[in-house]
Amino acid sequence: MVIVLTAIVAGFAATMLANLITTVYLHRALSHRALALAAPVRAVCRILVWISTGIRPRQWVAVHRKHHAYTDVEGDPHSPVLLGWWRVQLTNVALYRRAVREPELVARHARDLPADRWDRWLFDRSLVGLGIGIAILVAILGPWSGLLAAFIHANLYLATSAAVNGMGHHFGRRPYPNGAGNLQWLAFLTAGEGLHNNHHAAPTSARLSHRWFEIDFGWWVIRLLSWFRLAKVRLVGRSVRL
Image (cartoon, rainbow, N blue to C red; front, top):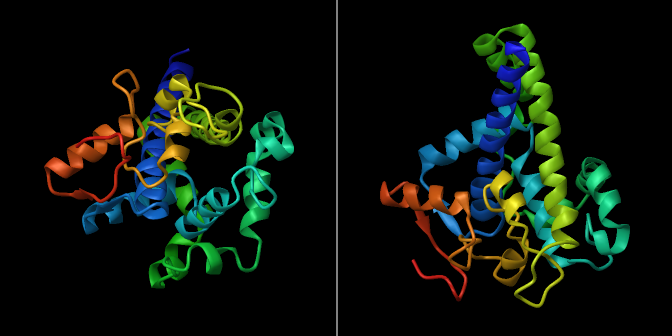
């Protein structure tokens, strides 16, 4: 019982960390250039993305930018309007993999993020990164708790990421006239990403919460980094005040 509880807590914590890095680094900083991170923070984020998700940032950015370029019309890599939200929820990984196999995807949508020598030598080796992440969990928690925590983290991260793309374009409040919805419960799990209607209303905003009752953990972290001069906010939504 202790092993299971430890694994659940550790898996959930790992997912929250991965989602935080995803929204602050991959989404707001790289994809939309809403903020600039200091070099040490970028290095840490790059490593954490690698060992917690195995994602290649330039590919994630390219897929996301294509989503904004073709939101809910032909060409959108993961549109519930075209495919149904349940299919996106269940097959989001397959849809992502199909998108990154497009020959010109990165060249067209992420040309500002060319692969460097660190990518070629290290960070493009996704399985190595994931293996290191699992090894860290095993070293800290022991073999059974560590492996179970890794399993929980993988499934929870994939499920919450899929929910942003699937549920986030089908359910939720729509204060702005676009096809996405605000789901605060999903925002809790994804460090703000569930406030998806707000995001599509102001894609280049570093802050996803636009109202006093909306909670965006990613924005709290950005503000903290800003106080320590480790981040500089470039863009916010029209209704947002710093």
